Length: 457
Ligand code: PMP
Image 1 (cartoon, helix red, strand yellow):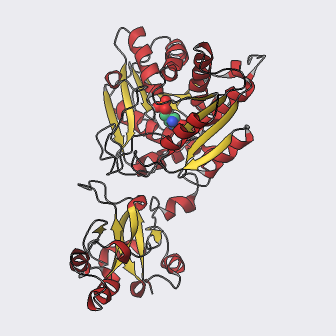
Image 2 (cartoon, rainbow, N blue to C red):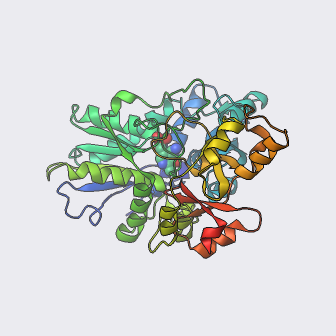
């Protein structure tokens, strides 16, 4: 029988382990999911929020009438709103503008105030989410910035609760622990506890989006929210969170976005576990790990939050098609193959360099993209800054409005509209409208090619 609690705060933690029997079919090592979306606030971050607030009270950083402030992907904000409001504080959540709208709505419902700010700008940019919340914390009297990335009460929550729960629930049989890495609190706290309890026998695996820098990617954008480490090319000093202790992680599994997203969709359909995209990354990693193991091993993987916050994203077929993650029966794929190699123009190119590049561009247009040293994963849609047109540049040169050595600057046009490779030519024509001569076609959320209006008939 389930427990009776005098406060919701006592109902944080104590989540079940559920065997992934269908996804793990044919794999010798059993895989168990730690279902963290069954926490009372709906995610693993309830644990960290409670731990951080109690520590701040204990350390005198948070006093009656105080305000809790945090930059959060949503889940930490929900945890802080839940805990903070229960304990009588005002709560302000700074949310990344790319996070799903549902997350902000939930925060407001719990009584938090929401401030939206970008994260896809250099870390030094005053508009960056982290700088926005930092300023608020300095301006508001009695404010306390939870700072989950550097707050050691975050991993400590998992040393005291998540780790011991998993050890007890598996009767000490767990041999591998797999979790996504955002602040690193979950993987560091749980991982270090399990290593200590097992005398060093438990292997800890970080599940990371392929492009994230944690596992060795270039830090370009990816499509799984709340995990991984993004790096804007203009960021000068890249700081690692103190909640993450790198030595606890034995290895990383680097998971491409499509694998993460398709895996979380299987998790709901085949296992009855409706989870968010970071659970897809974690389970995809756990499956890779378990395939290399035997029947005496036991893998535990964390499902951090519920799929209810992502019904309009990963759990929507339309969204999956729009970003090029689903493509059965695609006709655009055939057109794309015929269109020739993708031409892109770096945002810091000169007019002369752009004209040269545009010589072979279909439709005489190409996306202008944020410059990176190398592009092992292609150009993510979020890195497209605008478009360059052969016609516009040639006219500017002919009229003397620009010289070949000038930066592109003012001659950059609006970004071309995008379609997913799985959408139809009709849908592509519809997004084109009257204003544009071409569309960008996305495969796995990355620009795979440009289709001119003429070829869409
Ligand atoms: N998945 C989701 C959905 C999350 O909200 C978070 C927290 N940002 C994580 C994974 C990563 O957890 P942690 O911060 O403990 O590394």
